[in-house]
Length: 121
Image (tube, rainbow, N blue to C red; front, side):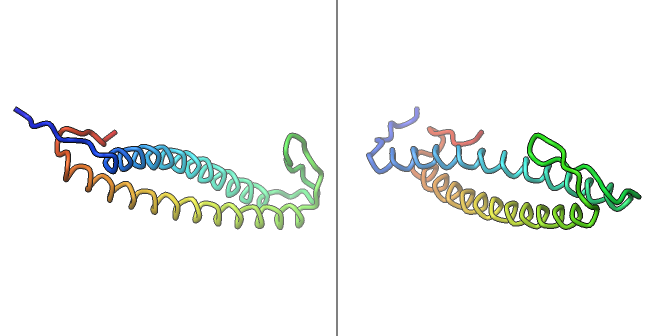
């Protein structure tokens, strides 16, 4: 027979914090996946641009195409690639921080509630 464990206000705050952090973790994972896909697309575009013999190319900006000189397009792709790398690093850092906080809360909550609480996905 399992014993009843009293849930204090502090415990409830920890459980709520865990829930919020878990939602943030999923959000950061989705953002990271999207940014990594963008990086792949940018790398593909850079490769295609290198192989191109054209001096003027069409580049997508928002919802439309712009005619650009090849050198300008390469420069713009380089800038966008560096920005995206920075964004990936920032999201990865935030995700790591959230994962550390989740691990700490999970440890604290499992220590008190043992198998009466399920914090796994």
